[in-house]
Structures are given as C-alpha cells and as structure tokens.
Length: 212
Image 1 (cartoon, rainbow, N blue to C red):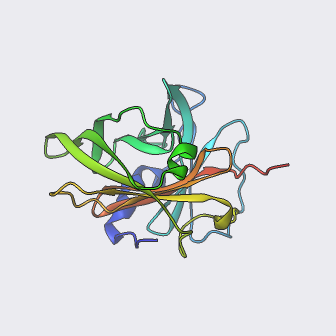
Image 2: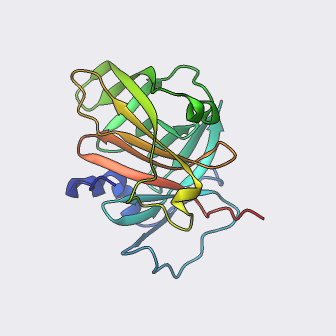
Image 3: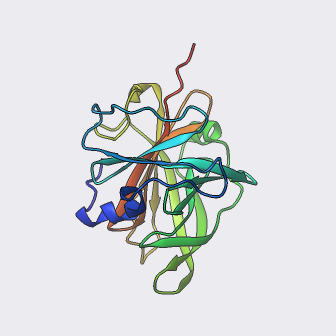
C-alpha cells in the first residue's frame, strides 16, 4: 500500500480531541487512537456501525450517521463528514482538504466490473476547497488487479476478495490511485482513497462481519 504522508494525520484531527455526542443520537464516534492494530482494549457500542480508518498509522472510528439516497454519511466527533457511495469517496467536509458537490454517473455493479476484459473508463466531477476549485473533471480508469502485497486490511483474507484499482488519467491530475476490495456478495468492504496527493487514508467496515 502507498505510504501515507506525515501531514495526512490532520485529515481526521478532530478525532484526537475529546469525545462528544452530536444532536442526532445515532451519530456517535469514539475518538480512540490506537498505536497499532492489536492493542485495542476498548469496546465499540454495538448499536452503531463504524469504519476503521487508518491515517498515517493511526486507527480511528467514525460512526454511521445516516444514508442520503444511497450515500452513507460517516461522522467524527468534530462533525467532519465522510461520504461513501457504493464504496467510493463522494465527499469530505470539515477537513483540511474538502471534496464538495461530487458527481458520479450510474456505474455497473462491482460483480459486472470484475468480469470485464478491459479497464472501465468513467468521469467524476467535484469541487475542492480551499482554493475554490470548481468543476474538477477526473477521468478514471478502473481495473481488476492482483491481490496486493500490502494494505491496511485486517481480520479478512485478502485473497478472498476481488481487488480493483481506480486511476485518474486526466492530464493535470496528481491524485494517487484508489483501491477497493469487494467481497463475494459484491460489496466493497475496504478502500483506499486520497483527497490530494498528500492526504490519503484507508477505511474498512467495522467490525468485520463473520460469515456463517
């Protein structure tokens, strides 16, 4: 997996401050930061769903606060909001770099993409703050890749998942490629995304659901 830039830790800086409860009782998050994967001695409230986010080696747990027409809204204790649609990053606000007004087309199911013989090209538009950069047009090339040797995935066998890489091939793009891991049911269970060339993070649905 690509190395996270040292400055990337500020992406979820709000999680490093005291835990708070937002107005919506569903929107709760634990601001615990673990120095390594195996040192967790706390329990997450089972009433809520979480992401396990890794930023610069630190592990954070935003909580699911709602679903807006298929877009999952994940909140931190400082009201930073991560938006995911079918596993893809479609918004981030409250952070040092923000993605707003992200627009993506209707895309084939992951199971269909996995069967394609050639990379699938599609276009995403987005606004970025700060800097008032509006209507950025990303030309994305999505393809199946071999199981990566390195990732932040835990408690799942990487070889049991189908892996994708999504690369921005726009001429002036500096975004590192995104990666996705899809389970047998066609759901994205792990992803790696970058808001800029220096702000990257991974996420995984947490806790891992054990198949019976």
